[in-house]
Length: 281
Image (cartoon, rainbow, N blue to C red; front, side, top):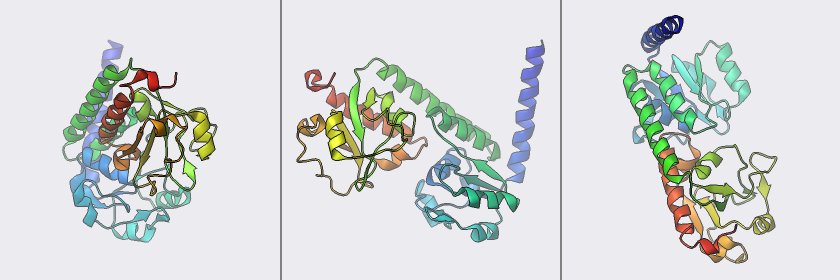
């Protein structure tokens, strides 16, 4: 009985909080491309009045005012737009400028995503500010269902050793437990630099050679010279022609489109598994 009453109380809090949030939040600003996509997935598209540079999805956001970039946040411009809510990115926006926003009384929502499950959780949380919260709840549920289906399909596949190249000069990759490592792991990928103490380690070509990856992933946004590994045939991925270019927007932005990144990576790793004898054990 007590548990039942607690559930009812929680439900009432959610309902009342949602109503208040919807009526009080009419003008929203997002400070990161992934936050823009999450806001639209949550049903907030009609309330967004400004976004960050490189926010280009969905297409209609391209013409909105830009109030943030890699250099920082344009606080005066944000204040002039009189937002009711600013969706911030604590891992990417300058902490001092975020603190200044809060000191000026600007209401903020921190969009922090470290795991795939956080994507759906963020969409659901943001949906409380939508005129129709069911849009966000439905999109969150669809994401979870697609994720579960992919997990079931790939949970017993053979591991494939991969190297993900984030940049060319210097060569930077990812370590375990840092975005987007979980995306690769979903398909049975095994990161050759997973045990690096740095979250985004800088490595040399010689270190990649020693790591012997069966697959190398990169993206056109990050790597200009697509033939930079051509002379390194002692790397299995080079010898086997397992160097593939990924859609960086799907992969590096934690949004519903991350599902497409998982599907893309899974298809490439499936290709690598076609000749098991070629793979490292």
